[in-house]
Image 1 (cartoon, rainbow, N blue to C red):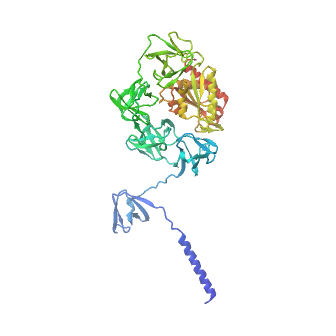
Image 2 (cartoon, helix red, strand yellow):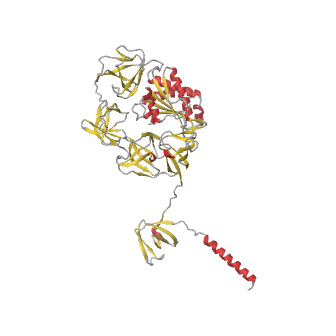
Image 3 (tube, helix red, strand yellow):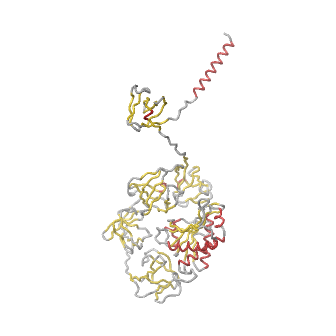
Length: 609
């Protein structure tokens, strides 16, 4: 055999093998399938594109078919496991919707308050900050029982024991919203949860709800948010990551009901009384009976969400046993009280005495009366306690069984509530610089909100003290931090008359101006107080900065004003997200102007101007 011919044949064979091999590994291309919908009441699918061909099957109107190819006025289609031809006249192309791209990331949620965020995955490493219960952070990695996270300001490690790691889907598409099943409730598991105007965390904040509150769900969004009724006639959205959903009222798996071991009474201190309902929820049906102010009822059963089962006027049902509306005690308190026959005054001669919600030491303290204070007596009880107007909106009882006080018919010259022109002597104000420590608040244009809040609050403190007022600061450095619960309770703890929370705003770069907020849901009405403070600030700013925008006084249930025991207001003094605002609010002149306005508002409200 000729060697050259053999080599040539071998080469040709190898080339053919390579060519076929190349074709073998090339995947078959698939065109995207087109879907067709049947428009006729019934449509025949045939063996060929002709009305004379055999009918394979008949499909009904709105059936979806897959298009294979076209031939004239006929389409070859697939239906289930059959392929055939159908008249194009009775088929309509279904438009396909391209779904919005989404990304998936993990979030870390703290199961406890004050969880340490450490520099490395060891209990011996440096603490960089804290993560409170219900707060979230971005997941980075997990190692040896520790989880690395990133917050808005800190990257560090937390113990995996005290967090949950979950998948969070982020998508630009609007969530699908559907109506909820009948009698579906959302039970809050976080200590405090935001209610928002839309099903996302960036929408307007409407209010806060507290742990164990049971809220009726009206609608459900596909992005893990639900619309709830948080007050009578008011609805908003909450994240389902911070609660559980239950059909009908929550069972003992979320709320437990117990009978007190000792005979326990509940004393109503809510002036409007408490409605008896058929279950332990504000959404439950009213039974048409009110337990009035200063009534005593025995607690027959108690739910873990604070509601109590009672019997009043032969009507058994549930009332809200919150400490905001009364108090529980094993002491059987009985008293009678009447107005004095002539005007009398209660005068503090020395020391301090508690002002209580009822004339007994078993009742909780509302605050304290100190040396130099005096009050007009409203009622005197049979056990020698006197009822006084403790603040402009709040009444309370003080014991007259001590040598620290006296009762007189002669009006004293100074008092907490007496009008002394141009001075706030005796008035106690809590000034609350918002945020602090690990919580920076908003930031932008080289300023951080927590620092601005503290500087403005200190200016307000100085201005109040200059006219004789007493100021209690919730924090005095940027390394201190109080929870919302602790801030809201601070005025009651200190026996203060009012509460002012200081903040700075954030929003679009074009947003500008100052505004103030009060709560319409708080036990103590703060509208007049907030009006006086905002008007004082407005007049002071108008004089020094006539073009700076007044964004008005607004009603909003921010936690620290909603759950406060005294008149309160929350101030937003400018936008850190606006370059001009940021420069203005970071100046001592502006802070002093605001402080002057606050003092003028206080003087006006307490009749000292």
